[in-house]
Length: 185
Figure 1 (spheres, rainbow, N blue to C red):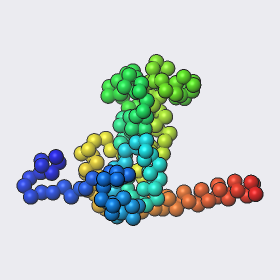
Figure 2: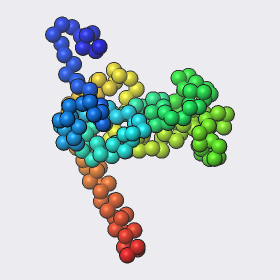
Figure 3: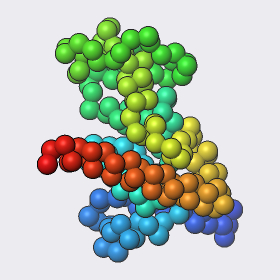
Figure 4: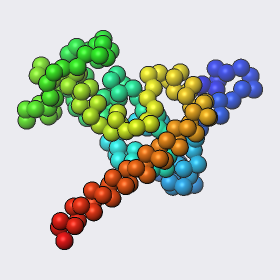
């Protein structure tokens, strides 16, 4: 569709591949193949939520929906009441957050009615690694995404920063496990 809107002879040069899709060519199903990509759009669906850590470890620049507006419906897409929450997500200003902890009552876990709503889902989403990991790129629109993916120098800087951060994460995790296991043994 996008290439159809370009002038004759122009090509976007983008290839969209779905991770975990067995209908993809076998050469695209390995992490070695993913390490060769310029960047990845990551939509945290249920089956692949943990893959963000694998892709981060590869230092592959990751683009996710903007955390306050577009990320919550992906993170909490199984909550049936999301569509019924008040006020409508599209009409709510992104800066309004409640001064309460979301999902504090057992009945709130699957119910986003009057006691919870869109603000609670957004607040909870802000606590996920999808919103908090350093060097993740977030996009508000597809136009923003295309512009960022086209910035090869920016992607290289991001990839290097992710590699350095992943190294620090390994050191912190190693220290944590060393401390835990030394007490247990």
